[in-house]
Length: 88
Image 1 (cartoon, one colour):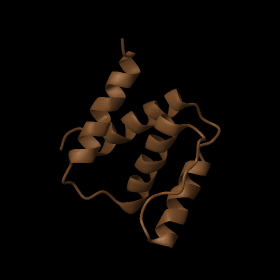
Image 2: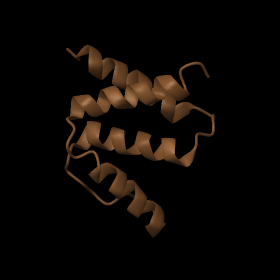
Image 3: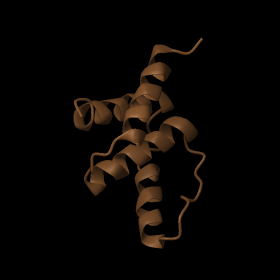
């Protein structure tokens, strides 16, 4: 059975991935990094896409979260979604 945190994380992901709201780039970068840390931990992989500078920012943002656990990243992701997207 899924933990409550995992269920809340999935709900937050569904909200963030289906929103039509245009978020600031820094918030999008945070969502990306927290999502990756929550789902992959420190098993880093090169971001997809062929825009090198953007990929460097994405990978750097993920590296900066290496000290937090996957559960902490899930909580932070949920908090960001609630802050920016909950009422939209």
